[in-house]
Amino acid sequence: MNRKSSIALTLLVVFGISLLLGAFIFIVLGRTTDSNLRQKREKAFYAAEAGINKAIWYLNTPTGLGGRGSSWRVSNFSETFKEGSYRFSILEETSGILSIISTGEMSGIPRTIIQKMHGNSLPAAFSYAIYNNGSLDLRGASSIRGDLFANGDISIQKASNHPSGDVFTTAGHTVNGAPGTVPDPVPTMPALNTTTYDQKIIAAQAQPAGNVILNNTNLGGGITYVNGDATISGNITGGGTIVVTGKANISSATISEDTTIISNGLMTIQGNSNMASGAVLYSPTQISIPGTPRIYGSVMSAKITANGNPTILGLLFSWDVSTELTGNVTVYGSVVNPSSSSYTGSINIEFRPEYLPTPPEGLSSGGLSLMKGSWKEL
Image 1 (cartoon, rainbow, N blue to C red):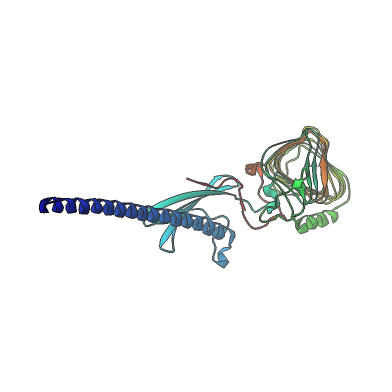
Image 2: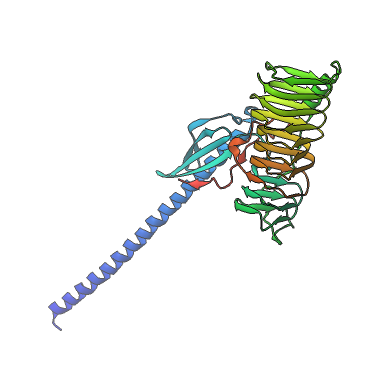
């Protein structure tokens, strides 16, 4: 091989090595750049999550403790987070539902996530279509849409239908014989502070005794006391409060918005009664619903029996004995039951947070609840 050929071969080898080395460096740099980009995207995601958590903290913390309170609404509120930042907006979609939209940013790379919350202060038990503080047995032609929780075993019979939502139990309990899933956190049975209702009943007991018929009555936004039994019918207008020391019989009444009816004895709701939004029905003994009413608001009693054909847009809450649904009952909202139970009627319950009312007196938890299944990245 002459000198010229040797030089050419050497140059060719050097060129080939340079190409290989260049390709290797290109791949390494590319992978390094890609790895750095992934790290920045991951950090931006964590920053967005931090924004969601900080927004929730602001909402659940009173202003005196450094928070902003549950009524706070804001657009593009920004704070630094490590070497980056996040900005979030708190928007009220409809009554009772909040959307928190948070964008995290690292080195100019953004990621955005959204989390919805129930913008009311009801206890966490009202985040379920049915909350049972005991075992739950779904029988009959029931259809339940939304999450279920039982502090015991859950049995869903073949005739029953649960087309949407998750099923949760406390530790050691089962769902149709299989180990149940424990929610985090585990919701506790709500307690009702009855002081406001007790005081009104005591005030009614100081009035002259006698049974009363309230028919086509304008309450005028005030309090009507009955020291005896009351029959309520016709058009009840003006909003306000009716306090009855004995039994209250609501019979085919049309009742205007923001009306509270307190009965120290049995409350019976008969016929085609219609109670507009903001209704609060309270009895420390029992509420019985044999009729076909339509109720917008809160039904609360130590014991609730619904064996008619009612439609409730709001909540059914029994805190002591039981909630018994044996008729053709429709609930858009939430049912909270303090005991083990079998639902044997043709019941249709759909968790609809937009129908959950402003917390009635004595039933506020002072916080917000996450809306299950609403988290997603935009």
